[in-house]
Length: 245
Length: 204
Image (cartoon, rainbow over all chains, first blue to last red; front, side):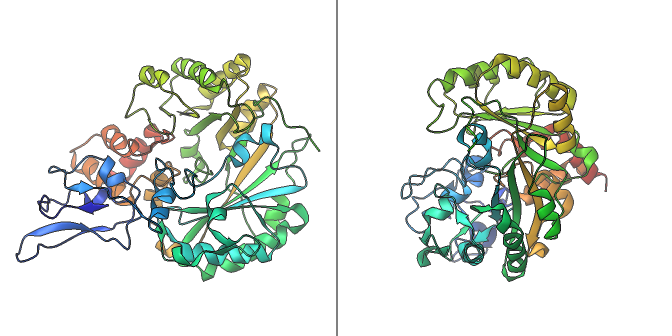
């Protein structure tokens, strides 16, 4: 995103509308008047400041994003469709349609590590650190996930070099693991956390058993995690239902 | 994904926050889903939902009547109480749309609501919390509002600015919540709960 210095009147109305605090004031070239500018290194191209339509002089304008900067838009602006990857948004259908797709079955766990969320943002070098760590722990990356698409090597989790410094509001590493490997995977995630310059939100998905049992929960607790009281629940209304293996 | 999970706040506050997400699965039951989603908007319109959306439009950017005319691939709505949610789920069950349905909220409340209707949960996603360099996180009261948009499109500084406007009497808490909610394109932001949280921030 850019701000036209000729149109900007320095009112600073746009400043709080930046999701990552990347808009600030500078002296206009050759004068003492202040104008607002977007720190291009910090801007994640979410589009909020532009869509908000709050600039009194319409000085905020989007520019065409070229690779590798275009990954910022696709991982930050849910209205963006990625021209290079052909994938829109940050994630997949994951558990949302699990009743009909059967992606996550009994005996397996789905794990999502959303780096940058909430309220911080992430560089892809942090995504790279976490992805490589979980790959070593036996995680299998979801092939339709946009982060997986950006891996130079899907078996090691290595993210391609040319995007490591790009920044996004968040990026989700989505993977699956057999239930007997889950405790180790969660321990690896915990051990990798201090190596990151950002935060991450951690999700654990399981197919519920016939008697309502959730085999992932005691494992998460054993690995030192306390699940929050609010959950996301697929209630099985989709048709046709996926057949159990 | 995960965008209706990770809502922060205490149990009492979360008791007023339930998100419904309904969608077809790519490659399985997309054909005909557009018409089914039109029926869904009809059903939503009979309930007191505090927000709704299809990923491109929400309550603050388009009326429910106009949303019915749009082609949608996903439907969201936010309920502020479990009683209304239960009534809605019962009607949705009877409608047999055949689309995947996800309820996000306090597990005990959602499970109880479904259990009373004879519905078994199929798949559950738990939040195992926020980790990493947590020193960088915005303040907790800001996060409670910020996390109601799973794509993180509600700027933390704007939340603080809106709380300031409420404190100064320049905006009502409802108007401030609406100014925040319009940026959540999915329509999963809960303006009812946000107004309460903004009032709380303004009172400090």
